[in-house]
Length: 132
View 1 (cartoon, rainbow, N blue to C red):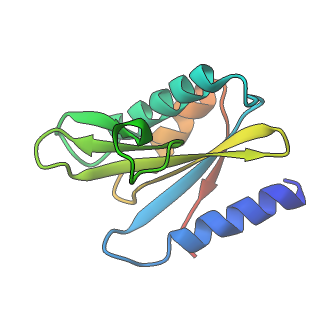
View 2: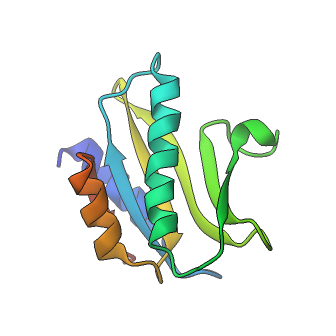
View 3: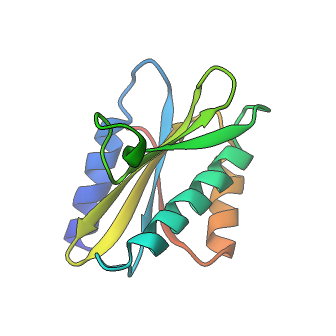
């Protein structure tokens, strides 16, 4: 991973510091550019669906997006449970050196190995980020 990637990894890892929820992270590197927003949003939702599929919850989930709320970042999405709005995952789409990296955070109780395997099988370039 290049220096930019190392920096992103370290920034992501810092956000996993102990808080109310034990978190795990992953970074999806893409070749998507600023003019490919619809593909970027589709990718974000697809990866979020994989995380939700392997989350330690049997509840159905939905995606809450920045376009839904002026206090939420435009390039930010969350997977929440339908009943109770419980956190499942969150992502931020970051434009870095002309292409997007998408950083995901999710509950550490999810089946990380299954998530990583599913995403790699789908052809995504990902980096697993464990808490420090």
